[in-house]
Image 1 (cartoon, rainbow, N blue to C red):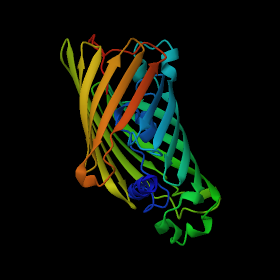
Image 2 (cartoon, helix red, strand yellow; image 1 turned 120 degrees about the horizontal axis):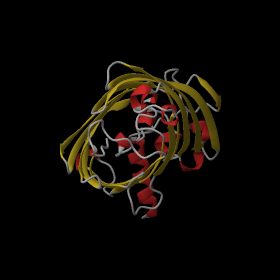
Image 3 (cartoon, rainbow, N blue to C red; image 1 turned 90 degrees about the vertical axis):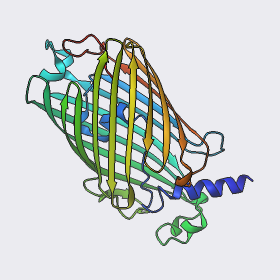
Image 4 (cartoon, rainbow, N blue to C red; image 1 turned 90 degrees about the horizontal axis):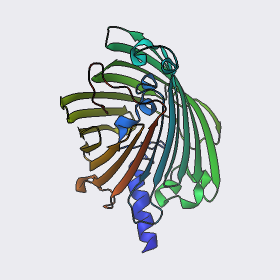
Length: 319
């Protein structure tokens, strides 16, 4: 029974990792809370914060994958005399760390990013960003499937460990407003050509990411937000994901999300003066052919300063 589970698990993971030779797609159901991971131009968009999440996939199955993420963002305008630092400042930085394990691969990813913004109007900025992306990928040749063993690239690493360290670049731009943002970024601009170690990956394909969000106060006790993300990568299927949230009385939110052809999720979160706590309950869709067990995702966000409110409005807004 245990062997059968591991076989099914690895086959499911192959849908996301083997076709791209160890380039797994990182799914974050609460993607709207981790904008700087996807686009360096959005570093510091919500000010100086520390963010993290834990994603426990296919709960209840021994050996199922887990993902851990920790990030820090800094908008230096918040340390100055600006009455509206989100508009008046120019420089922001972010650091993202993500640990992921999928099939025979274990990956540590670090992104150091810088963003600069140009004020276009009283409420709108153009943001440009660049990030240095470092990946440390380990291959455990002891758990290769029969299909992997027959792969000419992976077969030499059977029954042993191999490491690959890759240095690459991310670029991004975004148009941001109090109530909306539109952004585009590209990861792996250099396609993984700077690396050290044993080449068990052919190359890293560039990833194009489009993200957009809109938020609006409907009444003194209700606010709505909607977010969408689209990713394009040559060696993986296109990915479209969206979510909608309702924020009640500045205190808690409910929401729902959909990852096209893969999964649906339900969201719950709480807003404290400097904390946000979020939870996702995700259900795979039958036609995705993934394991049927649910996924849990927990998020914690800490703002170094009390979050700013919208100009002329006393309601806290979230993406």
